[in-house]
Length: 498
Image (cartoon, rainbow, N blue to C red; front, side, top):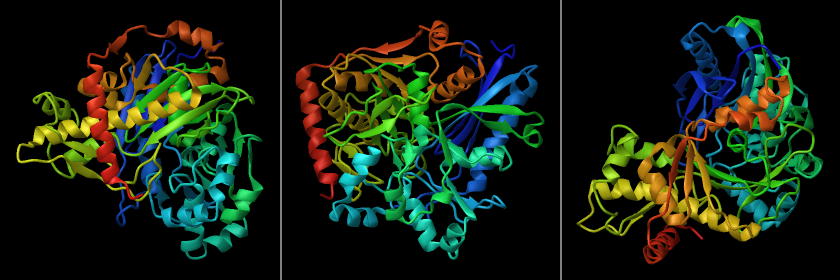
């Protein structure tokens, strides 16, 4: 076992970059966070400045170390990176300079092209090879857009001068000063270019999207020796021993390592994943099949449902409508009224994800009367998050034939007690929130520590698990639940484009 005392987890998300330093028991020793500026060039488009991603992430590394009493880089065993998935970056392999902004997973600019491929019947090919829906959400069409629309990009790519990466790959490349161009199975499985059955980049898909293979990173298990953070960045060399997409990392952080174990993360979006073991499960209800975080070359698979807008809807109430000053206030306002007074919100700001996959859907408030007040709208926004999770939960039970008896939750919005109680009520099962809700970062910590020998086994990690936390138990009648769900179904039908 390593004699060093701490693991550093880098959690690069859609709206912020964080660095959390954990001790061996998985307790947070130090934490730093910086907001990531959002760029919306036109309706439906979403971008990040790649240098904002890099600057915020390297900045919080230094801040977390500075904020940890009597800890320096020599006491860090290793680092793990968890990242927003599907967001695509293309940069010059010689200079490290991006040719365009990062196109964020929420961006819908390639939806029309995806619809064209669907009309050709290519969606079935995509699903059979990658486990994914043919959608602008994933990376492939974003890369194609950059190559087709940035002057000289395609020519440079075909000469071998440009490389692609999801955010983990971009950070790895820069943290190692260009020495490592790699990703892990979980992130590769979100690109719509990776064959999840052969665990290789798929030549047919690369040809279809016009993407040179020379652009692509090497692919390894999530728990792997990826390189070392260069001395010049934080004054010490720290091994990078894990990469994982944020949702797969959270699944591992919740120790959902056996088939049938399930979690839901409440962040910018909502992401429910069920570990399905070494065999991918085919969905017939709009879910996707993905590769879970892995510690060896025989990865586990997961069934996943993605909600595009969850916590982002609360941010919109705060920043767009200015109904609240902080996200935390949403709970207070929701509890001021006994219900929504018949108001429903469908936050389809970027279309609808699973199980609908309707890119043309748009957000609506419905059921409005003169009696509707600000409190009702805020409560409807929070309830909408729970209803979207219900849709995915129901599809997952049907696809797997497994009756889910409890839901493990994490993520920033899981701290909202009103939301968690309503979630338990609308699902009709207990919802369990752990004492440490930073499970995305915790998963990266566990994966890195297992690689280095900081942890000997998953069983050892389980022994450190804190049994405290909170369980929300359902208290709603079946009649009330059914009535509310029927109202939600009607609201969704009004928001949909098809």
